[in-house]
Length: 184
Image: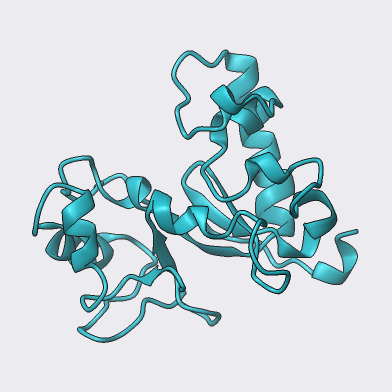
């Protein structure tokens, strides 16, 4: 099963997880207001302005399906700062049994900031991180993940507030051009 596209037909599932039936309308409103994000009509997937696959919205449960533990040919995803990256091209680091597999299938922002694979650090929560850890997070986010791996979507918590209302601070990430053959 694939992750949800940001379209009215699939967003009703978010209502159950994010505070009621306002979620589909909230996502549509947020996407209409977000700079750089084209308007979305019913039945239409959100696509980046230039080209590429549709941008997907991932709940924690959906992201967990892409942890490198399943089928050999399934993509491997991880999130940092609520941005979901396809790290499949680095599968020697991220597949089952590989050194960084613990980071996959979830938002591992805290673990990336602390350079930690401790299960307690494999979360989106950045509460209590030091200035040095936050700088490290930004450096790794921009110089490793955004520079090397395609963005395939966003964690639901980055786009929606806990009550299901739109996160008005949401900004889609720009991604520099990268060439996967130069990665490793």
